[in-house]
Image 1 (cartoon, rainbow, N blue to C red):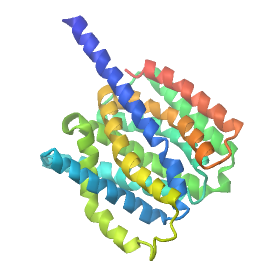
Image 2 (image 1 turned 135 degrees about the horizontal axis):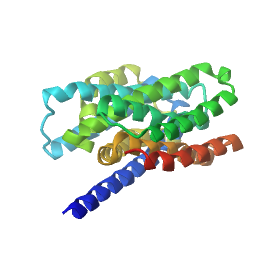
Image 3 (image 1 turned 180 degrees about the horizontal axis):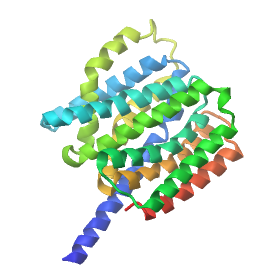
Length: 296
């Protein structure tokens, strides 16, 4: 019986890492896609539009599967998720990408695992081993050190916006993961989107550009990607992974996101990826193995 329980636990944790990895791969395209989109869309309009599109899709899913309304006690956590990942992170990153390249902003994503782990302790009640924090902080310091070496004074507004985005996103990740244990992974993001709809939908109408005829196909495709994948599908895998494998542990997979994101930025946007970026990325990826080993 104990062996069966142990095997089930291992399978559960493995499923968490697989789901988390799929979520990270999907999220990796978010910043390059947002960078393309803000070249032609106003960043605030883009944020509200992606949330509105995803919310309507989420509403359809909830109706199709006849999901019950969340309990009254779950609405505050859902509001925190909505403020963190539906509005806060997309808006702050879209504003930041007016000042910095997606390649530069992606490096800041290396701070997300630490932020997620901290909020996982505060909001999720998790207690990783002390050595876990060593690896997590080391990865974050590498990211910050690289950013400082590039000269934060070159675009201080963009860097401050990215740091704020990381904080609200880490809170939204941890709160959503905690909630998904009782509400379900895809249900959390769908309900968070739906409760955002009364705010974001009117703003889309107010902020819509006078004419959409001049918008290029790449910009439309970018809007479609961040609406469907970044705002909805990615979270289905991500929240399920965090709930299965642990917020702090699976959250360290975000250290892989810069690697995928930089590759996309170089391939799709033809942005320069320096040797320093690659060295930092490889170094923070190496921290994932250590953090994973001591997460529990």
